[in-house]
Length: 639
Image 1 (cartoon, helix red, strand yellow):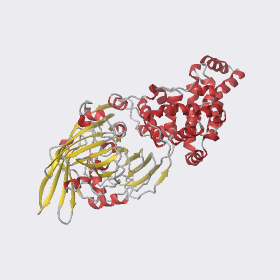
Image 2: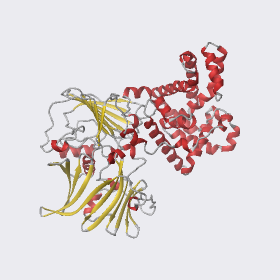
Image 3: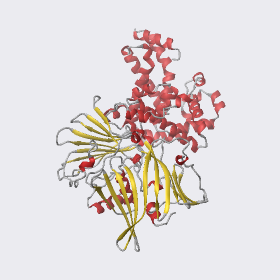
Image 4: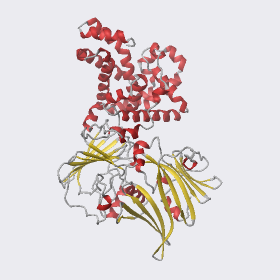
């Protein structure tokens, strides 16, 4: 197969009916095809079956191949389709067999027996580590690694085969590398071992020793392009595929689709397709209509319940046509089928009546608290699920009798890049995002004072989920000269002026009470849901004459009361300021204020925006912040 002239000539002869050439072509094809399938499935029996079926189909359809030099991509697509069907039909069985294979190690596969010399060179222990590490990856990650590193396919070729965009493939490949690197690090290997590990895996799974000797992966192969996400969304038409197409073509494993059909009244979402929000909210918002309107909602959790959520909503337009809202990993869209226009917005959707956005994965505690506070019971049935790729679909219609839940297992939506909508190719695209939102992330500068002490800080915030891995969130906050708060991937902490750790907390602790746009909800919903998690009551209102809302969060104790008053820009989906109030004798006294500024890229010389270093505070126990930390800050009780 490595001799292109040989197999091209065989293909041509075979297409003319030469039986000997057909047999020779099958034998020449089998080893390379086996290596391709086995590297994805890591199951010898499955790989053998798929290879045999693919070769039989190759023989049957060979006369339909137009160009002999396209033989291998054509055959690879046949095998890929059969891999898809394998995962679609055998997910539960695959999980059990995969666990068995992991326990047995790689000794059961046939390729190992043929590589005695290679085994001595690499060592059995190292081979097992590499094999098991690759085995732990999700099949979709292995798939893109195999195609890119061992099949040497271009991103465009992989996209064509997987029926998605090139950008989607680049993001998927980047995440596959990160996932592999994390698992290698858990076994004591540093970042520099990623490329050697991929090369070793290629040698271990090669069909022959000669093929193993030819395995070569360069650092250029591993590059994906820093600005791929921003370029793909900001400057091109949206390339999409439907859920039905996904179900028929993608290779993934695990995950669940939960479908519930329940009645619910119209929730007036703020229209994300208009730029006239400020004018619209000068008047008092209309109460929710009693008319039941058909609506379909998809809630997709790429990291399982409790993680980021990607939403898609389809609603019938009484004036004709439909509206589709899509908040995926790249941006926030609205498609008006009446006008054939796609609007790309800064902000996520929010309920126009200012009720809090509920999720079907909300546990009873937060759901009951919100229902009691708003006087609006939640009719969505609770769905549990910690596995990656959970998809919950909710259908709302005029039927007042709740339909029973239906649980459907799907293996097709584990990758958020494919959570798309089938918009017309000629749709008119209007992108109203500002430069910061087109960038996909922003630096944040915080200034102000609380209780007479100056507060200053910097941070970085992804504005969409796709940016959260490369431009992950971090925060550094200085309270006068006595305390420093840091929060990054390595964890969160409070230190004194001398650098002594006073409190050590899980990463993300000090983002509570702040906007977290990459999690998929509008800022006003994030703030209010954070308050509800701490059982703090709140009130929300529109600010007249502006496109802003105000959220007041209250804490009542026996001797004193505190308020956090947030001013949120609804159109840009960010916090403008937080005011700190203390109530004495029914009089509200302002004790502080924090102002927020959002900036684009900063130069490397600006030390204010240097990322905090990940630190290990082994001597200090990690504890959970039971209260909202901003309230503790107002009460001078940090840490």
